[in-house]
Image (cartoon, rainbow over the protein chains, first blue to last red):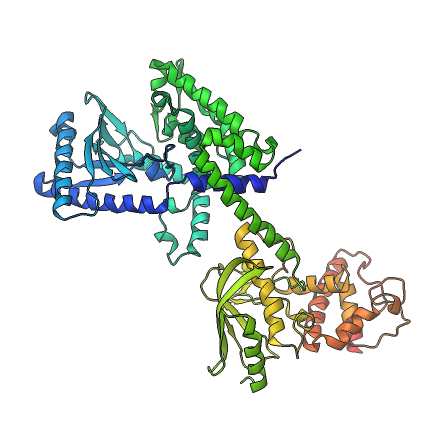
Amino acid sequence: MLDIDEDQLDLFFDEIYQNLDVPKDTIRAADKEHEILAEWLKDDSEVKFKTNSSLYPQGSVLFGTSVKPVKDGDDFDYDLVYLRQIQKDSISKKELKEQVGEQLHRFVEHLKTINHPTIPTLKEGGRCWTLKYGNKFHMDILPALPDEDHTRYTINKSDGIILTDKALHEWCFSNPKGYNTWFKNQMRQELNEVKARLVRDSSMNIEEIPDNDAKTILQRAIQILKRHRDSTFQGDKENKPISIIITTLATKSYKKTGSLTKALKDIVSTMASHIETKDGEDWVTSPINPAENFANKWKENPTKKEAFYRWLELANEEFGSLETRGTVIQLSEGLKKTMGETVITGALKSYQEKKFKRDALKIAVSSVKTQTPPHTEVKS
Amino acid sequence: MITTSDKEDIQRSLENYPGLQFYPDAEVPYIQGIWEAKFNGVLFETYEVKIDFIHGYPNKLPLVYEISSKIPRLADRHLNPPGWDACLFVADSRWEVWPLGSSFLKFLEIPIHNFFLWQAYYDEFQKPPPSGERSHYDQGVVEYYYERLSVTKPDQALRLLLATKYITKRTDRCPCGKNISFKDCHYETVKLFRDNAEKLYIQKAINIFLEIVEQQRKIYAQKKEKSLIYTFNISPSEILKK
């Protein structure tokens, strides 16, 4: 017997998602700074290097699966690819990294001279540069070059990029735009339906609504799973399962049932079945490049594999049988430990308000004085 | 043109609706403003509305528009294309919902109130409320008469509607086909329709049911089966000829 009905569970989990989603004003502010930086880098590259460049989001910012940091004081991570249109033979890995650093250093100085409201601080990372804007967000800028091999990927073949490893020894391959195409294609119809609903609440046309303003059930489920992972691995960041593995396996496990809690249950119960074994090695195959294994670090570092399966087991315990975990209040007590107290307390409060409204609406429509069901009489 | 007393009635009706403003001197007098979909003091949603008092009011229903496009322009949301006026109820039921001679206040309190609560429910749950809706076009009219006359077959509805026009004795067998007298069955309901419903809509409904019955008759004739439709000796067409 169910303790909580499915509608209530979905309502509560939707509020959990709302509470861990990065606030729109933070994303808008980061988008704006991204645009300013992109324009400056484009002009600067043309003048200084006589080459074209572009700066675009990658990872969870592009996929619409970013989540708030677990700790209240931590800022939001906005990942960008800085693609310079030059051939890899014409520049060393070290030069690529240093030239970008030098440009960003001058960009910060430029912001100071124009009295830009927020002056970011520049910090060097392993293979990227970080611009930190106050306490709300930071941008990780990853220098990249075009991948001249257009046979590597099954879609967006010419969007492949090469980037350096952390030690600046090797070129690595990636295709964030291609992966995003695959990811969005898995839920295209649902995405369009969510956008259509947003259209009527705004003055925008459907084409003007950014993809990531419309969140599908799959994106919401991935955000909840990522938050659960972040909380689980707070003291062990080195071994936490990487987002691309969670996103890929969750997408492959997703069944379009129209319910967030059913989606979570389906995903945690079937995601392991999408991990293949090739020559004794675990493979989470890239959906756009059959030769790329997102779990390539598991072989040399079995602790990462163990950490993934440990997390999946915990996620299964958490999301696999939600309907039997007592009332929403009882369920929320358990979730506070795994998803964070602030998120769950906020979700419970808005859930209760929304439930009150829904219950009142049910009473209202069943108490109307005369039954006058609406009808449509004119054919178009 | 609407009469001065109608304008006064409309103005009075708006006393408890501060969000709505009446423009009586416009070429087509209208109300415009914010409609609050609320019940027992709980506000669920607000809609920007315009209500046009078209020529022929109050015989002709005012046209109600949701003008901020909060409600998608879809027949499934009960907006009539191409102008997207709200379809508040089956026109045949007007005599019960907002009879001629009633104040405009009743129009606000019942059909408009119910319509926007229905829309607020749909917006919240992404599905129609369990209190239901009528199917589109003529099928909605058929459903109304089935429900109101408590019958399930087109020939039953047809014969009962015909009984509102042609004399049927109280002691005759009930036109619905049950083997009991009219007075012990549908007499009171038929009398209600005869005394209150608009003749024009009754005639339209008769034509709809007549067409359905004739179609079914043809199907049975093609199948060369004994007609299962008529329980009486005279067909509806023959009754109409009398």
